[in-house]
Image 1 (cartoon, rainbow, N blue to C red):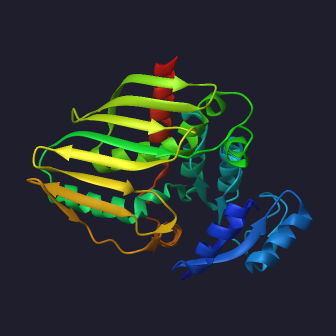
Image 2 (tube, rainbow, N blue to C red):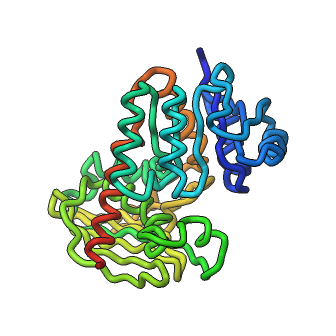
Length: 319
């Protein structure tokens, strides 16, 4: 087998306009089916994205035609959908956040272990050009020992907007802290990927009615991190300060973009050259390769579950 045949579960514009084309383009990946509870919607989606097959449920998938599924469904449906697909012997890529709770994540991981199939989380900013370049610079010690960091990932979304309504169910942590579960998971995933795990949540300022959260974290390395994730504004910024300089970005997250990164040392600021990239193309090439080879993906289920653990810690601290 030279390519993984993916079924796309979910027919939102995001799924059809961004995820489907990337699945069709990525090396080692084939877009083979669209899946929706509404058979006519599944058929229309398959025709729209050029997939040869359509199914009305995970249970109805012909596994002789499909090797794995990509779940682009409401967050509340991630765990059940992943477990159902894994039990059918399908590889699974689940959109972020992995699930609503660590308990759900553990159930998903148990199902993956039992099936022997890949379970990965779509933490696509792993491949964002500024993040890739920052990781390389940090590995080279470009700013010395890191002392502090700030990372902001917020999206202006008014109450009642599709983005806010589509992220969380009507009740529970993911509703009260919707921005954290939507964009904050990108920030948590990225800063821990760059600088290491969180040791403790020091403080949280939140407006649970609006879904905003601003947290002060301490990493296991002792580095302090200011994290902001809010519905009330647009934010796209990080700064990592060390004893030998600083890295800054005023556009670190995006979908198909180059972004921005600068390195400041000894009072001199250097703009880092970045090449435009579609984060989904790189993501699905990597995950398809891992499914084909049986290797653990960089955006593993364990990494996804740890991000949920950190979000739950922030929510707990807020309360």
